[in-house]
Amino acid sequence: MRIALLGDGSLPHVRRWGEYFRGRGYRVELFTFEETPETGFPVTWLHRHLPTNLLGYLSSLPRLKSELRRFEPDIINALYISGYGLLGALSGYQPLVLSALGSDLLIDYRKHFIHRAQIHYAIGRAGLITVDSESLIPPALEAGARREDIIKVYFGIDRDTFHPSDQRPENGPLRIISTRNLYPVYNLDLLIEAAPRIAGSIDAEFVICGEGPERERLEQRIAELQLAGRFSFEGRLSPEELSGRLRSSHIYVSTSTSDSTSVSLLEAMACGAYPVVTGIEANREWIENGVNGTILKENDPEELAGAVISAAVDRELISAATARNLEIIEERALWEKNMEKAELRMLKLPGIG
Image (cartoon, rainbow, N blue to C red; front, side, top):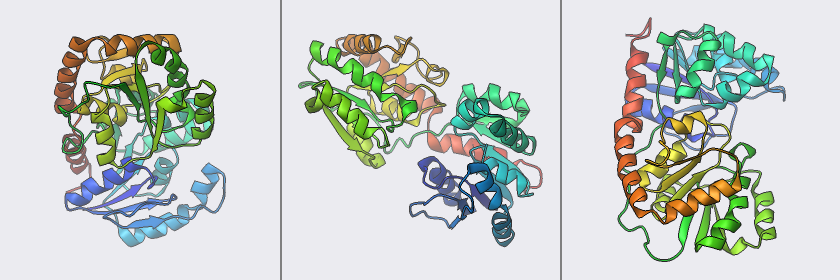
């Protein structure tokens, strides 16, 4: 079977999706507008002739159709429902699978009628829609999807890479880690503004793994708070490097203001870092407040600082949360198990097999 993937090849989620199907013996080719690191499957770069997003996509439709005629796919799978999903729907190939990545349904769909029109059109022509959070189902239904065509497929973790360690440091400073990229939606300001109170109450250090346009501004604010010596910016790390940082950290903090299921959260849970996260719906799908993590009620540095300090001194809570989080990861957050579910549903689509 030949699977044509349409998506942003610079995103690890898109490349992982392709690598899974390649590993299962399917012929996979990715069609993308973005520069893509080396993969185990072919990548065709689509030149965007116009700078504006929608017109840029549409102007590349003839080239995409030509490339698809060459590849002769059995399935089109677009990862991101607006933009790439629209192209998949306009390509004329069936069956069409749409994989929501979060902000397409949570942000784009609400932002502008043009995005809503794209998403409605694409969903109306899709035979299967994968989502990675319960929070994505209502907007998908609102956009015209049928409930029976939606399945949850979590962008889960590889337990060979992300797993706990009994070597987490017991002495020395409390290590607090964030592994979100440095974009406004992830609201790293909240953690930085909470840092003075945390550092004033306990010996703590802060590890920031991720990259993005906010870095210089965030570093400047840390310097203004005279906390530069307590923060380290690690940049974008390989999965193996990231898992090592998580295993040596005590508390994981996510201050995101919008998200579907966060793979960063799943990675932290798998590595035994105690989660302190914002109360967005997708986080509540994984964290029960006071049981396997802490859910913040407000966008408030004082509340965040208090939650971190309280967790730091409650060894019984952290021990129980770690055990429960490992159970949750095994139950529903393993990458291979989730992708097997997607594969089985795709094989049942009309015209396949």
